[in-house]
Length: 148
Image 1: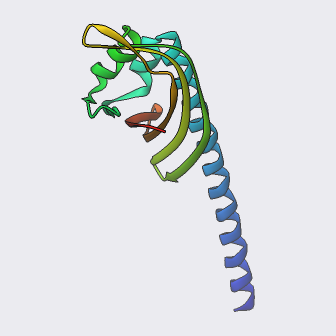
Image 2 (image 1 turned 90 degrees about the vertical axis):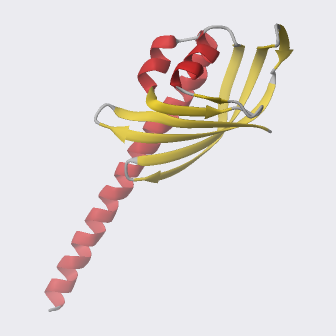
């Protein structure tokens, strides 16, 4: 009986170590995706957006507007937001199997088009992103932006 308990303890410890290792790898991948997203919105990288946003991705802007994937791609790549600098800081992660959420402070510089004019959007924003993992990797499934 004692040997069985020791064996179970060792097996449990090994599986916990593998689980922690798996989450750490996911956290690294998600951090890289957040940083890549920050670069993609500056470069207006449509290909990046199309491949890293899920087909059902929604974005909720501080103004109350809700955008679908096509709207998100257009907003960031076709000049609705003209972001000249962006960096993501203070990232926090919550990973639950094939779903994850990441919050990060985005410091951006740029302008946005509003009613035919431009509005300065330079500032700090809290981005809450949800991710789903599929056979092609992690994809962004939701973006909620709040002004800090």
